[in-house]
Amino acid sequence: MPELPEVETVVRGLRRIIPGRVIKSVKTDAPPACIVVSPSFRKKTLNGVLKEREILSIGRRGKNILIALSGDITLWVHLKMTGKFRHVDRAEPKHKHDLVVFDFAPNGSGNNLHLRFNDYRRFGRLRLFPNNELWQQPGLVELGPEPLEMTAEDFVELCHRRPRMIKPALLDQSFIAGLGNIYADESLYASRIHPRRLTDTVSKKKLIELHGHIQRVLEASIKMMGTTVISYSGVDGSSGAFQNFLKVYNSEDQPCGFCGGKIVREKIGSRSAHYCPRCQRLR
Image (cartoon, rainbow, N blue to C red; front, side):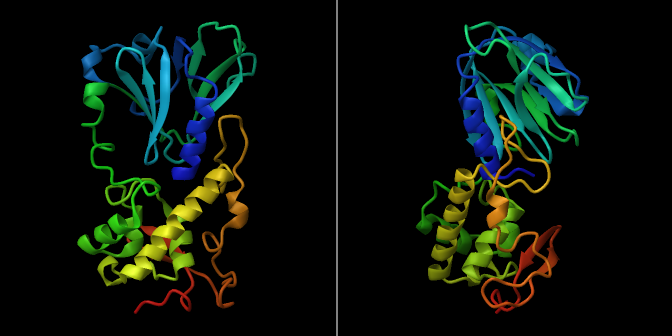
């Protein structure tokens, strides 16, 4: 699943091409579960609500993309496992996994291009809400702080106030928003903290170190346009490059870069964790 750096890369790509554009039409070929339109729109379709709306801005909250439109409404997108936006020529044949196609009114430039939402696993979600309803929705209302915005002191207080195993905590979007398996594993490895350690047993000094590694790893990945493990790509079709710099994620049985020991993969809760048992000891 795309995590914070990948979603941020998509957001930045969208910001370069669609703000100020007016939606001419929206064509959908998606399962009903993929598209949610608020009942406030009185049973209108996605096209019925979005047609002739101007795109005002693109934002991100955790792993969520928020597209603000004229008329005080927001198109809320979650890429889930394999969702992606593609800015392509209209003449390009429609792919069977192009679930939503956005056409724009002419504006003097880029008129031969439109935007497609592609998702071969079909788990992605496009949801449309009036702004006065948006932040009441499950999936947004409970989100925790942004890791690139919270201070080290706030991170320490959060960890000590809400004791639990640290890897599941970092994956919990109500605890901290935007992290997933890749960047949680990389940050814990860099900090030499076992993924099963309880948050309230980690010292303040060590948590400050972890906070620094989380921010460093995320910022480095954003600069490299994210991590492409299977299918992720940016709006222009480019893959990320941070996968070439991963130290522990997806490195089961490979030698640890610190001690030469063997990286292990272990299921913790419902998710896997990659770590070095020598360097990340469970005290």
